[in-house]
Length: 195
Image (spheres, rainbow, N blue to C red):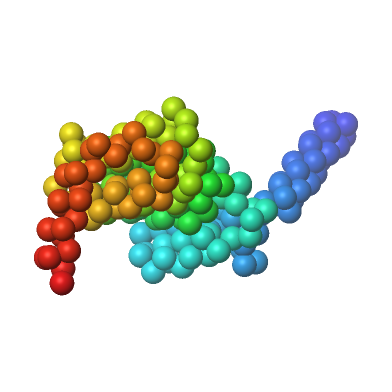
């Protein structure tokens, strides 16, 4: 019996030590563990979400890979607001968040809320800014240009962010140049409406 109790106590001690080590290894941002910021980012309170998004956007370079891993799944959250703030933070990280591109394209194409589509378009431009030509860039540029062509988005903010994103990507997105005619006409109309 005594042997069993000692084994049990040893197992509990090892478990507690590993939990403490894991907490020590979790990145901290502004003296808070990353898990707390992510929980706050998905909070129902909009003010808490904004503060968390700001803190995560300003995170140091060395902790950003851990943040990116935690935010990419939020792009497919059931809650639309979670998707929005995750897209914003990932966009703020620029090229470091390139792993999020496939999920951002899905967000651009599928969300029912226009601000999420606009946030996805903007984030794609920020992440792929001045990217080198590749098949991935061609696919992203095509998805962006579809928002003002084949899959014409009825919301001008989405179309505007899609055009801006193509511009941020730069020469690598030249495959969409023939499709810019409609976007430029759209921009002229938008400019007149917002003078």
